[in-house]
Amino acid sequence: MGPIRILLVDDEKDIVEMLADILSNHGFEADRAHSAEEALERIRETIYDAAILDFNLPDMDGVMLHRQIRQMDTELAGNTLFMSGMVQSDQNLGYYAAQSAGFLSKPFRVDQVLEALIGVLGRRYPQPPRREGDSGG
Image (cartoon, rainbow, N blue to C red; front, side, top):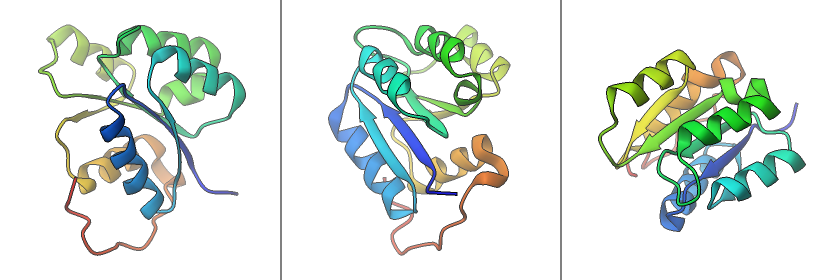
């Protein structure tokens, strides 16, 4: 089995690059998308083990994107984390819970990202060795 591949979706390029660095430092492969449309295109082309989706994208909100992902790849939809820097409504939080999806609140720490991935990936998480500086982010 190769490395675990994660799709990162956020219109904030700095967030995507920071997450990609965190994940690559912990043994993951990370692909980037900066819009829902780009994310859907990548999912059509590549098999992902998990996705981290920003809730507030310019072309589609996270719930709508997740619904489209679920139609394309139910396993990926079940291995999705949502993230946002804004306080989420009870309705959105209820959606995340109903989908068994995790939620990351921006700003986040490295350990929070990794802990959330463990939650969605379960036993498939690679358990890479911990590196110094794992509390930044």
